[in-house]
Structures are given as C-alpha cells and as structure tokens.
Amino acid sequence: MKHMSTVGRVAVLLAPAVIAACSGDSPSGPQGGATFLAVQTILTDNCGACHGALSGRFFQVTMDSAQLQQSGLVDPANPGQSLIILKPTNVAPHGGGLIASYNAANQAQVSEWISRLPPVPPSLLDAIKVGTGTSIQPPVIDGFFDPVWDQATRVRLRVADGWGEAEFVTVQAAYDGTYFYMLVVWDDDKASVRRQPWVKQADGSWKVLDAKNPVPGAGVTWSGYMGAAAFNEEDPSRFNYEDKLSIMWNTYGASTVAGFEQSGCTVACHDPSKGNGPGTAYNYTNPAMAAKMYTNAPAEIADLWHWKLVRNNQHSKADDQFVRYWVPGPTGAADGGRASDVGAAGYASNPAVAGRPQYRGPSLTVPPYYIFDNQKVLLTATELDAQPVGAEIPNMITSGPTG
Image 1 (cartoon, rainbow, N blue to C red):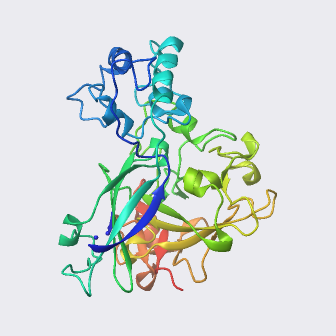
Image 2: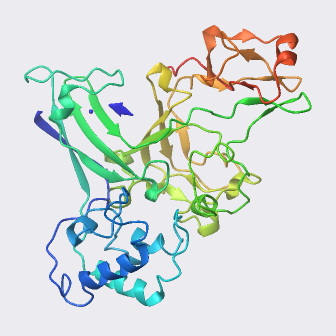
C-alpha cells in the first residue's frame, strides 16, 4: 500500500468507465423497458444465497439502482460485458462458479436494463496542493497514513477486471512544487511474500518453485486458469509469487496513446489468439503467442509504474517502465512493448551452482524471501546438506533500482 493529499488542484485521469454516474431510476427503468425491480428480483433469486445484505461482500443484492450503477459491475456501453452478467455465467471467474439458474432470459433482461443507463464518464481524481503556500504538510513516504489524507478526495476504482487479490482500490493524490504523491489502498487478507523460493526435495536436490502450479497450458486465459475451480489467490499449493501493483499513465503531445482516455491500459493489451485484440492468454512454450502489452502506433508511449512487494518494497522504490510500439514477431516476444527506463532493475535470482542455490542471507531463516545484495553469504555444501526436506532459501537478491 503506497502513498497521496489541498488548495490548488490538479485533475488526473485515472481510468475510464469505472465509476458510473448516479441517476434516478423510475419503476419502469431509466427510459422504460426492463425495470430495476425486475433486475433486483433476478439478482436476489440467483445471487442472494451468497450476496445478501450481511454477506460482507462488495456486491450485495440489496444494492439500490444508484449503488449498482456506481459499482463498476455494469457497463452501459457494452452491457453483455458487465461483470453482473459475466460472473454468474462464469465467463469471468466467479468464486461461486456457474449459476445455472441465471438463464438467457434473465441475462437479456439485466442487459436491457444496463443498456438504458447513462454513459459512464471517465473518473477524475483531484490532487490537492500541499507544502509551501498551504497549511498542509506533505506526506512522509514511510508506509503510514498522514493527516493530509484526511483532507484529500478519494476515488474508488475497480481494477484488473475484478480479478487479482484486490478487486477495488481507493486512490488519493497530492502535489507540491517538487513531487506528486499518491496513496493507493486496497484490501488484502494476506501479504504474498513467498516468491518462488528454492526448496529442498525428498531426494536431496533443490528446486525453484514455479510461480503457478500447475503451469498454465498454452492458450489458457487468465480468467480460465484462475476460474477453473473455487479460486483462492493465497493458496500456497497453487501460487508462489508476490503482491504487485502497476499504474499506467498516458503521455501527451506527440507520444499520446490513442484511445487511452476511453479504454485505459486495455488499449495496449494484445492477444495473438484473439487477432491481437485485448486478451489474456498464457503461452509459456511459445512467448510469441502469449498476450502482451504494446501500443498501436510508432510514436505512442505509455508510462508504467510497477511496484513489487518482494523485489522493490524494502527499498521504497518501484520500477519505472514504459510501454511502446512493437511489431508482433519473435524479436522481443516475451515482453512485447514493455521496457524499462535507464538504470538497473536492482534484483536478480539467487543463481544455481550445480543445481543448488548459491547464496543465503544473514541466516537460513525465511521469511524474508529476499536477500539484500550487500548481505549475501555463500552457502556451503555442509549447510545445504544439513537442511531438512522442505527447507526454503530465498530466490531474490535485491539492491534497489538505480537511474
């Protein structure tokens, strides 16, 4: 969770089509036709068992029409792609799986109601001025909340199409004569810090755990992989990775990314299995066939801030990257148009020597699942042989990004 805060303002366009306008809804619907009362009945009948008023879930069937319109779960521009349609049908991964009773007639009625809602405007975040000329002190970037955030406007945004450990983030922003500050807050029941460690096997060998278990098959989509069964983002038998946050920014002038203001980072998302349109297919055997990010014209560039809990956070840094134009093909197939600014990334894998990890930290205890570069110690054969089966050694050596 990273930082953001008063009197002069900067409007920042964060994401398109996320927070819907609030409008009244008569019993006959916004403009006649499918009524919200009918929609609420459909949702109650099909979703009420898990999404009642006391469920503690974000979506609750007792939401009124204005709350539902503002939830990010409906998309008036493309009703059939609304999460309120996709999740019960398990097209978008749904913890409750397929709701068979949510039939085509139900979906059509809900879609009709969504189509009659007003267009969703872009979400603007006001950054407030702090420091010189104001009575508000700038925030201290130390992982703790500051008084400034009690005064800054909050904007709540749905992220990652609702998938990821966090479905929504709350964002605030501030600026002074030198810096732009952000506070991004999300709910997460567990910090994911066990990033692909070395693990001792039953036969005495050592292995680096895969980030995902099993490794997704070629062409399997993100939602298909994670929605194959009741999904638990924190299942240690399936995932060995770290929490991450990325923020993509449009650039302006000659490098403006066309369509970004309307579609956000989706405009840079390309999946070969979908004719290079938006998509999320994995392909570990052929990187050229995996979905990746790139812009659509030679001059277009999007800025990208990429924070990683295990690799960056202990240095109070994030990777400064960017997304550029790329021609689909074998060259650069793994990363597509994603690249990094000048400087060192500041982390690397704990190298293998004869199939065993080369370094440890000041002790053999985990966590942490990283080793500071200036504290790494050569592992001896005696130490490795003495470790019990299942023992773990961190696989990330960090020093912090430069440049």
